[in-house]
Image 1 (cartoon, rainbow, N blue to C red):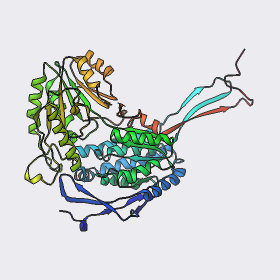
Image 2 (cartoon, helix red, strand yellow):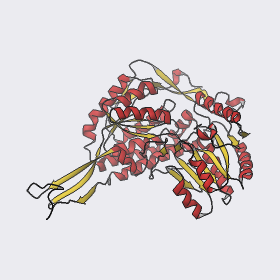
Image 3 (cartoon, one colour):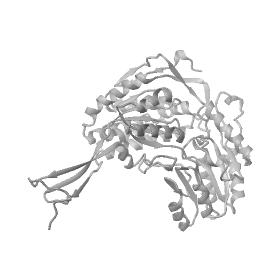
Length: 501
């Protein structure tokens, strides 16, 4: 296994240079499938490194914001091509540092590639508006302008895709940024930024500062030169960030938690719904904000569906995500494992029926990893905590319902509103659900996971604050509108006052 003597030490990336933390402190990055493997050593930074990075980004903004958007877009296109070339190597790095299986880490990187290509296209659009003036000989339009320095605080579950959602639209719009990777997955962000630098992003435009949230995230968010903050993480932390940004009039994008329902009606294609349930609940070991964490089953198919779901869950193969035969990897950390196991005990104590799983994976050859059996609860009441709170692990709660209307009421009766799903063959019911499900995303005859980069991503209620990542809506966060009036009448004209008699 790796030791500190043969493992690379990574520095912060500030103004195009590698900069160690002034404190001299570092953090270890270990494989959650086998903690004996040390992947890298990263800086435990603080306010001093944050100041350097933000000042570098602020200085770079003056030049980068004036580069024509199509030229900025060409750099994004080159970066996407480089990611394509290195997809396999980067996928292996990602599996080693966060655990999900290789087919999923390849997908994570593919999402970054798709995102780069999409926003490169926006470099030749980024449309403003022209509109008639109410006065003669006067031209009116509105243009998009970059915001400035953007702070980006990223999670560990999609350690390249989610940074790409933030960095690509920010860059094509002319902003500069400082990114704080998640403590568990800094290597994937380093790989991503190394590609951006090689593609031609100038020094200071993208900066990385690693470390703990309180030591890096807090001073980064509060820095007076930061004009916007993009955060993906828990609703609890998002609330704190939103409050702090409001005090200094920073714009703030929050993509937060979910407790995503999949409704299966009696008329559904059950084979399709079962495949979707397995993928939605246990893909990424349930560590997605869009994971299918509640399955709401009409009573006519309730028992049959659960019996089949349990049988298929038991066939899923756990292990190291580098093994191509493995279906489900580890959870990301010991603390995450303890939290999930705590929820499982809570579910049993609340009176729900544990029908499969619920235990750490006890194979001797995986004793150095953080593995939990795929877990299914049956007979869950909608108000139980396992049906209300985000668990972020391989745990799904099955809830009976009487009808579509009953199922939608159960689905909506949580504080989150990210993703939702309905399985039915009835087009009328499908469109009723699209209208009535209180969520930012709705799938019909597909699970609650599978977002594509050219559509808006985000939710309602405590899932976020109204901004969206993905699609052209992302540009609304990373740009400011400027209204422009050009009067060529050669005389003073007074809007709303000068009117024809």
